[in-house]
Length: 260
Length: 260
Image: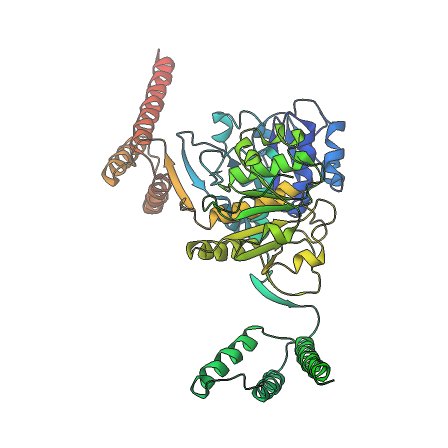
């Protein structure tokens, strides 16, 4: 095991992710990838079963090798959390301990607040098959439980890291919840929409579309609402004008053929 | 490819998960597991590269084989979504289309509302390497983009399904955001806390702990606050009484030894 360097605890990259006695190198590599997906940078390994470095971790970590290379190795969880102010430990099942238990979303919001206050934090994950021992869980300030299908809640190690990291990322993400992508063309003005609508109505009037007369106001309203719901861009309005012109042209040609 | 059965669209198990041209059987199996984690039950496959059934999917799906076995197979995405009222398609990158774009959390809330209104919905995922083609994305009502580290946002197929399924599960989950686990023993009454506090103060007074006298009120307040912050259970109070008794006993013995 390599020596530990606590002289310069990195402040970058969110909470340290601590894997306790991870078994498969592949899983450590996949954890590194999931961490990078979520903008997490600090990996700590407590007594990895197959030693360290572990070649088996490298291919699954592709793209996130720098996280593997800078991983720090510890003999015990006590040592791995010694410089952390706040320790969050994940578990799949309740252990009958007196602990604060949080879902990942609330834990993530609290982590962000603590980090903003300058507190070094850690997210701890147990071994693949058994999870953390009770003595290890006792070292945590907060227990994190992921609410999933109670009949089938086992997650692999990298998935557990991904879900916690995802929530940590979301807690500070400013992507709009919902937006309308317009592919670069600006929305049409209401005047442009109205001009199209009036042209459409004029063309439809030529073939007595709005009939009987007493239904005309309701039909106009429905059609206007349908055009409005499109929230058309300027390009859309040009496309619609083109479609109307083409249909009229098609009608003229058919008429011409019948007459001819 | 097996025939499709649209006679009895299942209402159970949330939106249908549709994988378009999935390449690796292993990934299909892992998707089935992630679906079961999140309580999703309906899997649809569009033109899986290696045909169907695919033995390679079975081991990674362990525990979720029933989802694989009931998967329905389609030749095109058009056929797979023909019975769906609302189609959500995931993509890793913007395509310059005019579309509603949502994050998984908002999409999940909207999915739940649409399902509650009786609308059959689908979540569509593209092939591993390339994602959905633009023609396929054009079939969607909503595009879902997962906000992750923009410098490293590629997810494998099962991870993408897991994150969307996780949000779908959370949107109806009622796990308290934060709770205090007490391991079955009830919280102590304030009277029990006070009785312990008074005993502690009496013992400390015997050795003139609160000194000088003018500091006594502040020291009492700090100590009371420290005991209160424990939010002790009844078992905790018994433990604390035992610790105080033991420390007193230790002091008596040391005194006895010195005198003896």
